[in-house]
Each structure stands twice: as C-alpha cells, then as structure tokens.
Image (tube, rainbow, N blue to C red):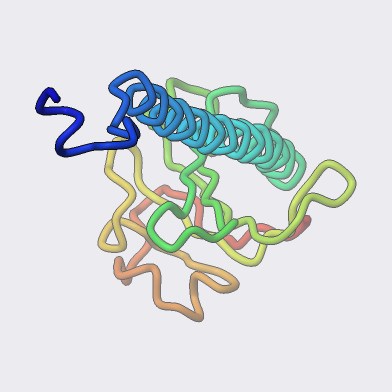
Length: 166
C-alpha cells in the first residue's frame, strides 16, 4: 500500500486540474463583472457629456439672444462644485479679444426650452480681471439677491445697466 492509499483509501483526493478549473472560473467571472462595470461607467459618462455639451450650446445661444452680440468666444463656467445646472456665461460688451473689454455675465439655470435657457440674473466685470466677487459690479436678478458683487461702484466709462430679455 502506498502513502496515497493510506490517507485516501477511495482515491478521492484533490485533483490539481479541478482546482485550476475552479480558479479560472472565479477569475473569468471577476473579469466579466469588472468589464460590465467599466462599460456602464463609460456609457454613463458619454451620455452626461452629450447632455453637458447640449446645455453649453444653449447657454451660448441664450447669451447671444439677450445681449444682441453674435460673439463666438464666450466663457461658460459650469457649477462643478455643487453639481447643478447653473452656468455663468460671460462675454465682451464690445468687440475685441476675449476678456479685453468689460464683460457681461449671465446666470443660466434650468432645462433647455426652445434652444435656450432661463436667465435668472447676471453682473458685469472690468476687462482682464478674473471672475471674482471683488471684481463684479452692477449685479441684477439672483446675483444681486445672493450678493455676488462686492465692487460697490461702477468703474468710469463701463456699462452698468441690467440687461432685459431672455
């Protein structure tokens, strides 16, 4: 009698081939689950990006319609901090390089209707300055309500009338 027969008299010992097959099945299952999760995440990301691009195009159409300027170089800032659909669209009040003239900024919210979005307020900024509450002036709408403008005076020669339209 050999050693194997003494410890396993019926010959039902562990088969190395069977262990390898079970391990491969577990690994394959795990890889398939990971692939499905990655595919779902990719599809979700693409759908979200398409929605954001559609919204940004509507923001630009809205700014052009309200200001009456057909400028192409607009700055659209998304609310990435709070994950809302509130966007701030800024553009020059007169022709010139982006940011080289006083800026009028509009706050767009809500869904797209008729290719445009609702504007709930806005503000002006002097040229060549960062969008910061200390540089904003002549707030109107929700920007005035939320105290987005800390510059208490209108710089000489700059526009200051709230825009009407939408």
